Amino acid sequence: MSSMLDIWIRIEAPDAASAFALEQRLAHLHPTAVYRHEQWCVELEDVDDRREEIEAAVHHWLEKQGLERTKMVVGDEAHAIVARAAAETAA
Image 1: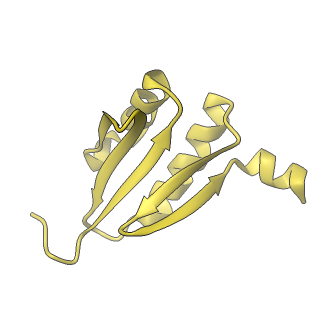
Image 2 (image 1 turned 60 degrees about the vertical axis):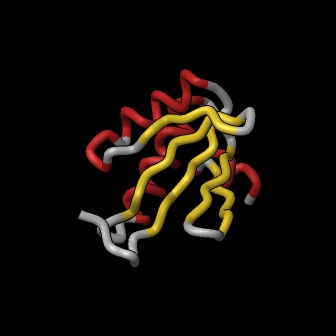
C-alpha cells in the first residue's frame, strides 16, 4: 500500500541489458525497467525509506556491469552515483 509520502526513484541505465540486470537485483522492491525518452531506466517506489539499501544495490550493479557512474533521481532531486572503484581511483 502506498501513501502520499512515498517517493519515486529512477536510476538510469545505458542499455536494456543493464536495466534488466538492475531490475533483477532490486526485484524484492518491485522495480520496473522502462525505456522512456530514448533512455533506459529502472523505476521504483521507495515505500519504506530504503534509499540506503537501494544505493548499495546500485553501487554493486555498477561494479558488476563495469560502469563508472549513473544518475539516480529521488523525487525531484538528481544524484550521481559513482562506482566505489571509480571513486577510490579519483581520490
